[in-house]
Image (cartoon, rainbow, N blue to C red; front, side, top):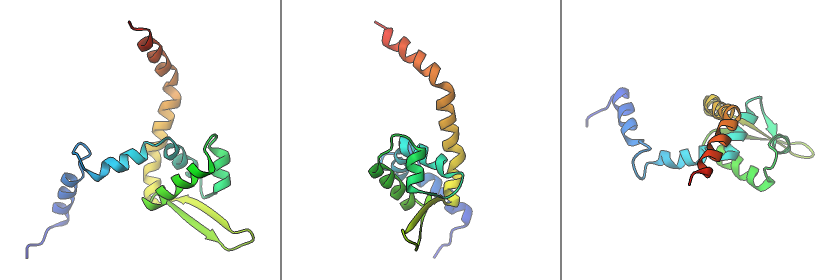
Length: 132
């Protein structure tokens, strides 16, 4: 039985997870990460644990159902933890995991880029729409 080194396993993983290849599981993850609610929940949680209602207040326009769905998906992917504290009423807090904290700089950079460049995007849209 041949054993593989850690370096060989890392190289194999790089080959196995190529988002340009059809059927690669990273495509599903990329799809999830590019969801607008995910792009807002991750930066919103960066300041520390928050309750569902705090997140709903912070992220204008998100429905309770969509926020719950987004948090469950992020929890399943290991990016968010859900902590239940026995009290009256029960307290549920959501927080970024270490993996979620690694993702945070990327997500906040995209959010900041969008906020900074929105005027230029609007200009480009006007120019595009004015073409014959």
